[in-house]
Image (cartoon, rainbow, N blue to C red):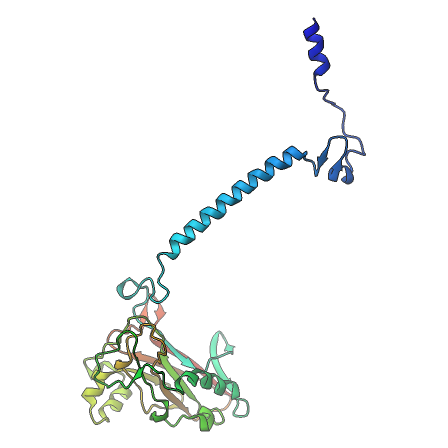
Length: 302
């Protein structure tokens, strides 16, 4: 009897009545003096949930840090993870300067006026800045060299190029005969392989190589960049990229070879398309509907 009365006196009284208006107020939510809660929780509840999240996020941070540590152990900051046959790329793409900042009908277009072509001049000048001074580790490569070794770079002399394009004439952008600079993108440990037969090349490029003093030697020593257009003439005095400048090993001061091409007599207010391709036996122009080793350039003179 006494035990039952003691238990009844010490039982917590649970109210079945709805909370009063005062208990439902925002102020009571922030601090409820009667229940001893802050934001709906007592001090012990806040301590428990705070401890849980501290342990939970500490574990997540530690697990993430461990994974990143393991991942970075697999990286080489100087050599790509996959090269050669393991790489998704089999040969580099063909890029050009000046860079284009205008798109017409979803086609990147070099649109300029001879009075306002300075932005394109600046784009070529900026690209050529590293070529002005000879790197300290540069060597004079011969056309028959077996290729670069790690740490060496070939000196590309921009002052002895066989081209009518020059900084003195603003690379043609003050006229209707602008110049474009074309190069292969850098691709680690890749070297172009020369074509064995002249008839594998476009007819115009065949005629150019046949006009050289040593056509057989030129075919063996170069990859080629050749541009064609059905609307305008094109001047290509030196379309060869010496194979001795390859491969690329991420060498300090590496200077990629390039060619200049001049588009002749652009008509005013007429869109012109120039298609350029790089040629070597190990350059694939199309794979899985993706163009490689090719650049399509649109011009608009106004």
